[in-house]
Length: 586
Ligand code: ARG
Image (cartoon, rainbow, N blue to C red):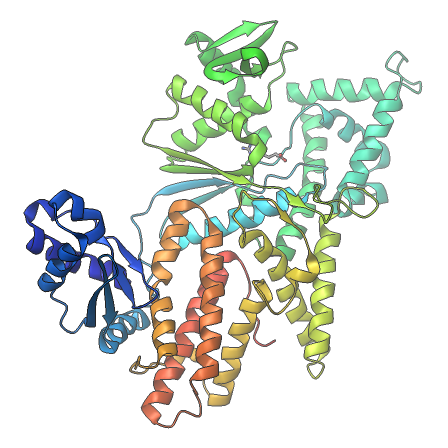
């Protein structure tokens, strides 16, 4: 199952060898899409110097040696030495027929690797922000895509569930009671809960004896010590707090259609027992040294202002461990226990320095062999109209659930207007699918490391490069099949690829497998988004120009219906890899 360019490559390579000699058997034929034909061979220009002939002459020698009977019906040398190739309709049709018969629609299975993916990673008792939303959406799409390519993906949700604030959070939860409205805030508005605890903590007077106004401060500090010492009662309280946050995370995941479950949780706390050993081993190996009371790793190439070395601090002077220490534990665990072949960290771009220091330390310690690929999939900022990090109008941090609800409301307004005849429940389902799809697509259609401005009205529009526009193509094809009286899944016929719009659609459909493989290799879901957007446009042009149900001959009608069914399969599969649902109708 191959795209035309891949199928053509060995044929052009043999022609180059026949024309220029065996030394050139491995030469890159430089195949590119062409404006004037189906594909362009640019090798002659690249090789002319080496063989000491003018490029046009090289090109015509290659053309003479090309054996493309049945594959191309037009072969021309043009310009300074390009070779333009036009495929025969029959060859294109035969390639497409293979994809049609393939239940994986051209996506080749790869040799399975173990791939832990670290993504989402919200913090307990805190609101998820739009940055968390983006790592969640991008990470989930990468997990789906790598799984589809045949890999064993191990989702790792590194939630922030440990650290000094847990003393005050636990005490606050004890004060208000687990069954109280305040405790419910952990599920509905976690920042409000956190703030209340913080205010109490900050206003308590440290000097006050227990029982006085300052009591809270003392209790919070004692609680942290007990938590770190593993006091069973404290651990139980802590678990109760984390459980409430899990309800909140799962509410967001379920609203968004994210594949993370509680089994994927591997928060900071899970590494507690490993941290002392990590520090000891690094100290023994002479990689970490004590500086100003803190245990630090100094690495070559990490310097700050005035060339001062920047250390990775792994144990603070008070004996506490750091974010860096637990990330050393993550890489060790993923390599040693999860037997990773590749590891992805889908995390905010500003954490690049942190990750690189962690990985370099792990390499030095022998925990991260060179043949294991570790990748920081950098997540860029999401901005408001003012081009600053997105906030609410009042300047407060955004409540993610409120934002998602607003997206669904906007989609509801769109669908109420376009499909008033549908019943309420159907319209509500569609509104949820396209409202959420719109938000996710906005994160996925731009490069994951670029910044973009969050604009709900643009995202839910049915036109332009939006999620709903792609979903609309699926709904439209379903409606064609409703008229035809059967399901797209059972539509199979001989494909005829003749009209320019049929050819364009065929060429595009043939690329699907390569694009999915590319996303798996580059970790860039926006390539798939861009591909699907072009597919939607190519399909619309085909549908406007080539009658399907009203085609004048039966075999043409069947062929075109089969093309529609294939677009349907590629589009629904592609949307699913992005994590978007495909509405029945729109
Ligand atoms: N909880 C962190 C945050 O909210 C992200 C953790 C990312 N994962 C990791 N292994 N460091 O910024």
